[in-house]
Length: 332
Length: 251
Image (tube, rainbow over all chains, first blue to last red; front, side, top):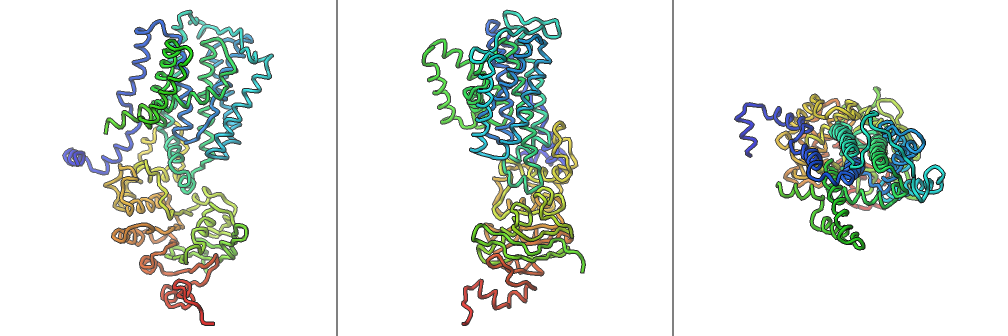
């Protein structure tokens, strides 16, 4: 093998070489800068599309949070909107009731969603597979109905109106062109991505992969599987809450759809298009889906869902593992 | 008499009308090389599941190094040095061999809950994993995903994963199951070279392996201990021959 010859020639002992390769897996690859370069370039290339851009950035965070539970811990959920919506309503209700400071709004959204994630996780994570799927669905539906009934606080079916979001740090106003909102979403996404990346490369993150790959073995090596799943479910819920709060603050509106099954399902579709369990699926799938949605709905306002469906079929039939899966296949 | 490494007293388990463990009294001495044999459906794997805590007994007691662990969860028993392997290979198939062994080492050292530092910074754990692979002759394939390995080699990884937990009591559930006869030699060799202080219980069908490794044999039939003794005594036992060869006892 070529590497073997290389190793021998370099004078490094083979065991040191192997351990070294393994220990350096968390180092940054130049390609990982690509999403951020694209996001910055988009400001110059598509200055008129910044509001859509902010939505895309915030939704990437939502899909990233879903990837942590689905892709890494193998928890299949159809109720991730519960956390997104909780974050959105928390930030929204604060801003509509006289507290429009954005960063504390985000934090409140994260805490509220994390709490919902922790409490519901205590119950739903006792199961796996289909029962788990149904229970996550139930949690989101319950919250959806609760938000619908509590219309005096949430605005019910009409959505939450009258949000007033203050300038960031008291300086940067949310302008009409969406520049501030775009920068805000980009910075928040970057920080959350950095945290998520640290997490998946940590021993904890590797043990999650172990749980996904073989839960029986994880029990047999003495891992507290239930506890680990609860931790990642809570972290993921908090990140989803930040994503919801971002969208609430940048659009100054929260609707019941933020808690809907539609939203839980769509984020999975976006993630699957991009590729599950590789941290970057969200960065590919979400822009692809949302740009396609934007284009299709302009070209064909009535039947645009058909084209989205067709896109999904193409991915499932020809690109298992999503777009990232395709790249992997070409590399080999 | 010194305290056994593992002991069960009156272990009883039934699924409805089916009794799978019937008052099993069993004792595994420190550093023992003990085999548990019996025909299919005798309850050998059930016994492993009961002892490790994957199943709960209806009655009876499990003692590890003298302490009652009957009500402890599986993970707590592992922490006390009770480790098993699986009859059907249960590895992280898509992960590398090295990772398969590093994960249990991280669990044992209590660093697996670390959320923030890169796993690669725990270099001592990785080096220990690699040293273990060298001992078992698996180091040349350390970075390959497990599913690419020959099945016999996968069985060795199965043993490596359990050794990574520094077991005091090791339960090998059919370590040579499914291994082509050409490769079973390397499994036997690996078992023979296990540290002497590990109390070893081998559940196995392969009689070559059993008689080469075991110093004591327990025969389990329909959830009960039929007989226990030295390999010579077991080989000569008429009752055992009847059970294994299907001879009918003379009326």
